Image 1 (cartoon, rainbow, N blue to C red):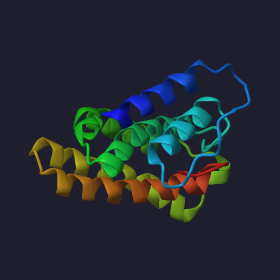
Image 2 (cartoon, rainbow, N blue to C red):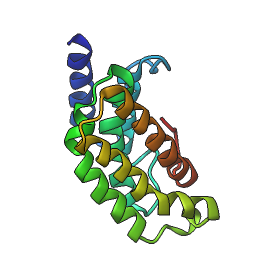
Image 3 (cartoon, rainbow, N blue to C red):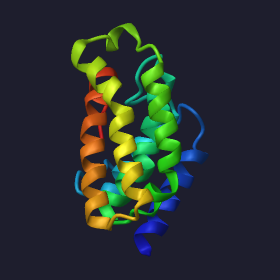
Image 4 (cartoon, rainbow, N blue to C red):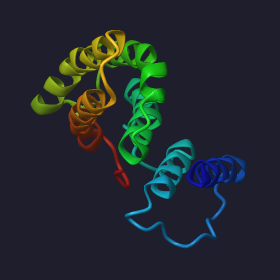
Length: 160
């Protein structure tokens, strides 16, 4: 419960900071996943980090991936995945139907873009049959790893 409170406070602080404000907090430790996630969201929202330049559909999917994968990975909490999977499928379809920016037009990225919907739909199918958390978490890890091909191939700045 304390981790959720810290996470919520970090998000609130990140959202309340004026644009361009310098962070006065110490550097985030690599093993503090909640703090890393909060910093990642703050940087994305400020337009400074891990955004696919000019690819708003991928950025929208990325926000959903962060909201679902990190609770699953860090806390074995699949409730966000179960609640947001419909949005993720719609966002994956939007990514697949969109035109990737020039910097993202590479063969391996085109394959990842085309496969994102099917991978997301696999997770949705598992949610619909009420798969157990262990299986669903494994499917989310696979989806996240495949998504990262696009994220890392198209994004600038720090990766999560």
